[in-house]
Length: 187
Image (cartoon, rainbow, N blue to C red; front, side):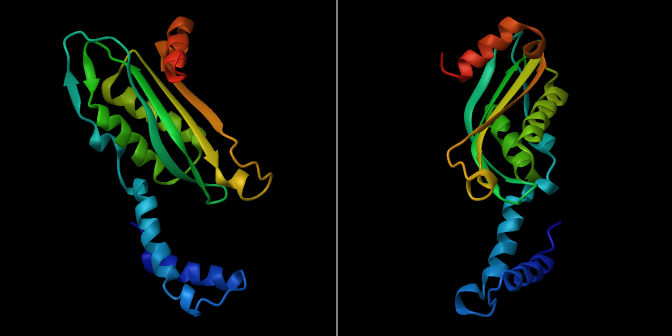
């Protein structure tokens, strides 16, 4: 679990380290605020995304299912700065085994709420879906702006990183993959 007292002490030290006075009025409550924030934004560290999966049987439905533009935010594990964007999740059910639509968004949210890499985020989401319902295929495309590229370093505000995790028929069949990408891109 999150150790809020340790986080508060670390934030206080960070403030001192950057030359700030942690006892000045505007910063007095900052360590506590940051500790509470960490509890929220890193909640995925202590939650199994499979715990939210709800499976339904829809007689022989094997047509594509997509939830598009799922808002995401996560924390880049390299710089501890946010990356913010959207995830598109697609799967093709096998023998009518489908998942509740909101559960796809919940899986994304849980996996994003920890120090993360965008590439891993998409792969973890795809793997949870594959393991939970064994669909014919899964695609997870994540588009995000990384504040570690916006606020520091190269300083390229507005640039987006796009990653994809493909499984099953969506990975192996070019026509299926093209259909998925066309739907994601709104064509």
